[in-house]
Image (cartoon, rainbow, N blue to C red; front, side, top):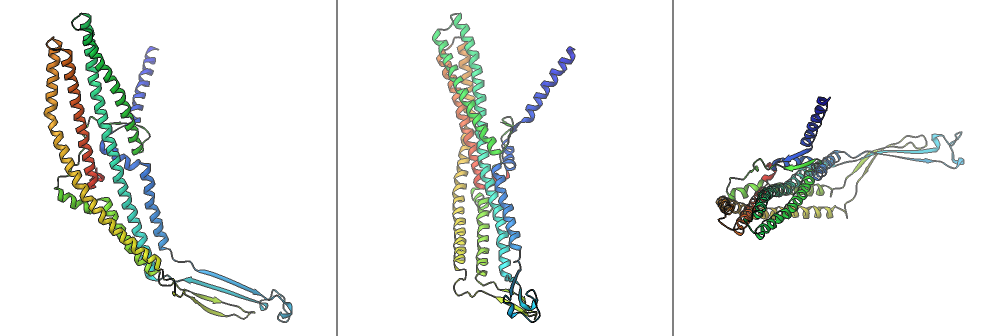
Length: 418
């Protein structure tokens, strides 16, 4: 019976462990961005714009429907009926059947389809630009979570060491090795760490919730801090990066496709200046005598030659060219500033290697001296604070470095390859 109970308990524990493992997602930077591209509800809604544009292509390819017209005139006064006939006789009625169809000029159909097809390309390029913007938001949120989790681990480790020191000092105070003031100073720092710990935990959970929203996942999420942060830093020179970005970044591609679409729309609006004729056939039995005729109609373009839409199309085309020029100037500025910032943050981060080692060595030496009575609690707590502050500055530099890295990838468009 005991074995069965033990087996049931073990099974329950393993099931819970499995459930937690399955339910929680540990994100690397690349995995978070990739998950957002797949699951983001915002992107899913924006992706439907492509399907809507494709539906417009189907509409553009449809030809005008034929029109069937019927008119019937019935002789009302029986005095005028044909001899020996009733009112329902075809001799007392005139019927008009007219079958017509609008004629779509070849260029109208061509440019209508071409414009709609280029609208699909625009929708796809706009989606890629939205992916680029979302990737930046997800990357920035992930880095904030990553740094907060690192800071949280640092604070927990520092607090654990300080908790041990408090216990040692309580024993030393009991043995009258140190004063009550020395013990109080240690406990004050311990209380400060406890307050910071609750703040960091809340900040981390808040940012984690934001990351879950951006990635579109409903399960619990956590940040993978064990693996190295994946970097895709460009090796090209600044001029090469600017040149590549001018050609390949999503908003540049979008601006160029917009120009292409607007030029096609200009051509399409010009074709609409030519009136669209309607032609057809008429079958007209009049008082049982059949007539066959031909029908043709066309607007006379004395007033309306689609001048307004043609003018609007030209203005929109000029606007698209201006937007491309503005985007290219913006790219040159963004790539230059983010590249220089990235290089500076990279250099700053490299300088911390020696600083961290020195602060650790100082803390170890002061702690050793303090525990043997060679220095005061003030010196030790000061060394502890300096050690903690140095690592806090290191994580600030690390966050600035990774944020500059993400900004550089965003500015160059390489973030879509991450």
